[in-house]
Amino acid sequence: MNDTVNIAYGRGHLAVRLPDDAEATVIRKVTLPKLGDQTAAIRAALEAPIGAVPYSTLVKGRRSACILICDITRPVPNRLFLRPMIEGLLAAGMPAAAISVVVATGLHRPNEGAELAELVGDPWVLDTVRVENHFARDDDAHVDLGPTSRGTPVKIDRRFVDADLRIVTGLIEPHFMAGWSGGRKVIAPGVAHHETIRTFHSARFMEDPLAVQCNLVGNPLHEEQLEIVAKIGEVYALNTVLDEDRDLVHVTFGEVIASHLAAIEFIAESTAIAVPRRFKTIVTSSAGYPLDKTYYQTVKGMVTPMDILEPGGTLIIASECSEGFGSPEFRDAQERLVTLGPERFLATLKAKTFAEIDEWQTEMQLKPMRMSRVQLYTTGLGAEERRITGVELVESVEAAIRASIDRAGDVAVAIIPEGPYVVPVHAARS
Image 1 (cartoon, one colour):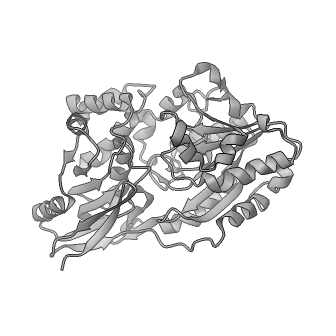
Image 2: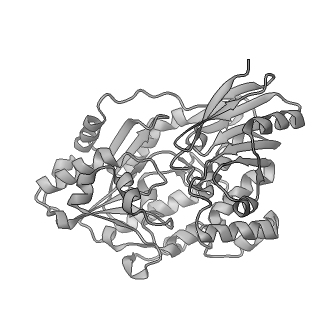
Image 3: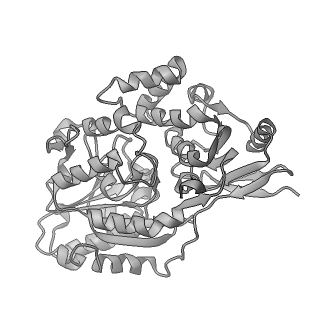
C-alpha cells in the first residue's frame, strides 16, 4: 500500500501519496514539549529577563514605549504577549496615548482592517493603544543614524528611535539570509528605511557564502543588524519559539542581543537536522499559512534544503500562493529573470549599490536553480504569474515524484513537511 505524507499547505495540509517503490526519509524538527500554560510562561519570561531587570521594574518611570511586532507573514502569537506587556506599562503610570505598537513591515505591504485584527489577535489591544504600520518609503518618518562601517545608510522609524522604551517581538526560526529571524531583524529590515534595506539586500551581501540559514558567525547581514542596534541604543526583545502545531514551546525576554541568542541556543539543535546523505528527489513546502500566501515567500522553501540536494536533482515545492504572486517590484524582477536568463540577471545585480525592491528574493531563487530542477505545485497562481516564476509548474506532486525517481534512477525521496522551518544539514558537515 502506498504511504501518504501530509505536508503543510495553506491553512491545512496536502496529502501526498508516494509511489510503491519510493523509499521516503521524512525530515522534521525534533519534537519539543509544549508549555502547559502559555500565558504564565510569557509572564515568567517578563519577570526573569536575560541581561535586564524584571519587566515590572524596567517600565517604571518611562515616558513612552514603542513595541514592534512582525507582519502577517509570520505566525507570531501576538495575542499571548501584547496585552500583558501593555498592561504592565499602564500599571506603571504610562498613559495609553504614549504607547504605540508598530507593525514591522520592512518593504512588505501594510496590514490593515481584518488582517490587522488577525495579526494582533486581541481586540483589547486595538481598542487601548495605537497600532500602526511602518512605511519604509516615507522619508520623513525615519531618523538618520549615520552609516555602518560597511557603508550601509542607517535610517530607522522615528516612532521607535524616539521612544523612551523600545521593545521588539518576534519568532525565532531559520532565515535563509540572516541566519535566524527574530530579535535584531525585527528592527532592520523591519522598521528600516528603504535605502537601508536595499543596501544590505544587495548582491554583495546576498552572494556572500556566510549569508545562509542558521549561521551568524561572519554573516554580513547579521553583523550589519548588530551595528544598527548599537546605533539605536537601549533595546529589549521578546522572542518566541513555536512547534509544528504553532503552539508556544519557549519564550525569552531581555536585552535584544542576549535574549535573541538565548532563544537560538534553545532551538538550534531541534531545527538543524543532520541527514546522512543527499537526495536527487526532495519534496518540501512553503510551511503553509501565512508563509505560503505569496510566491515571493515561497522562495524561502526552495533555498532551505539545498544542503541535502544532489546537484542535478529535482526539488519539488508545494505552496498555495493564496494571495498570488507578491509585490509589483517582485513581479518586475521575475520578468527580468525570465527575459534575461539567470546569468545575465545576476550580472545586473552585481553592478548595483542599492538593490531594487524585492529583487533580492529573485536572486535567492537563483541559488537552487543553479544546481537543480525546481518544480512548483500551486493552486493560487494564474497563467501569467506561472510563466514568470521561472520554474517548472506541475499539476500533481505525486506525478512529479514519480518522474523524478525515473529520471534519477534512485528511489530515495526526502520529504520536508514543514518547509523552511526545518533546516536539513548533510551529516558530513555536522
